Length: 323
Ligand SMILES: NC(=O)c1ccc[n+]([C@@H]2O[C@H](COP(=O)([O-])OP(=O)(O)OC[C@H]3O[C@@H](n4cnc5c(N)ncnc54)[C@H](OP(=O)(O)O)[C@@H]3O)[C@@H](O)[C@H]2O)c1
Image (cartoon, rainbow, N blue to C red):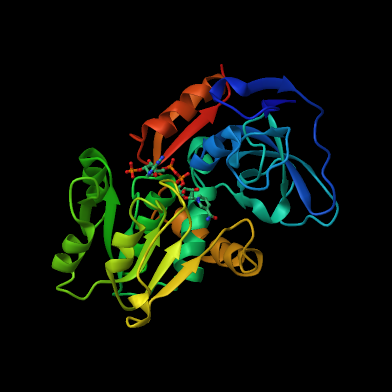
């Protein structure tokens, strides 16, 4: 097999399209022949060497879609020949070894590109809103970086739960698209005061749930925008990790919650089954639609990383095999 290998951390040029042995599935594992894979912000940090706990060398990619080509012992949730979308490390490759519980049936009529846009962003947003945030109908929810892959999934999940949703982004073009996808209000956090706008929009009440992903640049504004008993769910720090805020949050009984789908003890027992039972049905009936920004041949992975840094995308950048 071949895959985009990182042996030394650095710029996009360190990624090498390398030969490597085909993976063999162990118990509870599955091998997928990859037909499309999704690109994530985290991969740019993995390549650069600023992602915690990563061993080199490694193959890039965190999710994809394709056809199951081998299964290990105990696997009865899928079979050789099944079309699946999946979460799993090393997906920017011709084959990917994954845990069987991370292989989801490709909904009828979906392309592999659509499947490759339905993994990490959707599982993260589902864990954030359904499991950690416990979003309820009628609640007010702010989604930072609403155009991101996680953000565009969170928007659809929050709307399907009957929440009122405000999305933020750094560019008006992305905010216009967020409105088309159902955001009730939008805020350009570069040109507007987020707290003032939230208070106007919520008639002084503030937010029930704040999905925090930018970190240092916007965290104190988001915390100041929360309502009494509000819940901040932090799942990213694209804009820096060091945050200062007043402990007057105690007066408002704010809950600051943080999460990683890699390490959460609730992810496998709660998030995976509820995603399989509830989110897959909504993919199937068209309520949830993974959003694809751009499809590139896999040879253009450097361009994909540049695009993540340029921040113009709405939804997912997808890689497919070169013709
Ligand atoms: N906790 C978890 O388990 C988990 C799992 C998956 C992803 N994540 C996190 O979720 C976030 C979104 O990931 P994604 O793959 O969906 O990202 P993405 O599609 O690449 O979008 C990231 C967006 O973040 C915003 N941003 C703000 N400051 C930035 C900066 N300094 N550099 C780059 N982007 C910046 C940009 O939108 P604007 O310019 O509009 O602000 C950018 O488009 C990331 O923080 C990622 O690490 C967490």
